[in-house]
Length: 361
Image: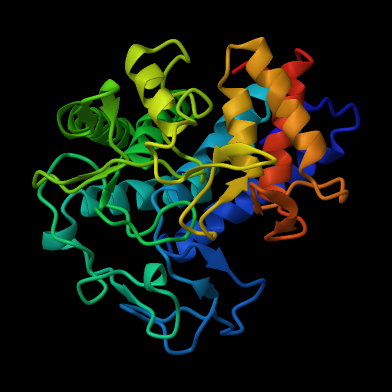
């Protein structure tokens, strides 16, 4: 996405992005439940003893994440808006959209209709979906079930609120795309609009909790049976990232309450140390702050002093590598995970573009 903020007089960069979009939708057609693919169908995989309902030689790992179906649509939509190119909206794109809709409709009724499961017996606990790979029990909410979070950690409760918010946004994009380029697909467009309506209704009914300190705020996960997970994680989509994914304005009252929670020690994955403070993740050790979380904090901030402090943190916590990392120890940024992390670096670049007036959230 960050590359779409750049001008491309020759068109060569946009050619590459268009090819990436086409490849992403081919992957969705191959297996919408896979989160990471091989370059070729050579059977390579994270573990040969991973258990799922199907084997796929192109699949490196079948950790189904709802956001994996959302990001390609987001990229295609903004590619169209930036470049005015429309050649990506072809029969293959349409087939992939139908597959996305099919999966989302199925996963609204996960326990009753979905065949998906995932078990990993040789990894850490959050690498495997509980309840024989099916996930904890859920009730119908209108929302779409997800096995894993953007961090690749298993969900505690199956309805991941920020991922469902992202789905609301991208289903709006799909309505616009279908209206513009597939006018004959009226039934599909109506189905997209209906799912979007049902997901939003589920968020409204089940996703908002009353916190004794912060008031009305969004839960991170719910199960539709009365349980919720009150936390936030760095991986996008996160609760902190809601204005970034275009779900709401930064000034939205419920978002502001949620933001105050996310950026506090009441959120068990927010850490403070001698060198930095910021959002972390259960994906890395306790006490590790993520550069991506700092960038999202900056991208969603309307406070110039806050942004200035975040820029200072980036300057002082890169361990002299000139790159952002995954997580770093809040007491000592020389201790970190991932020497380079392209997702984090890209979002940092977007933060810089925002600060110099080249990007509006």
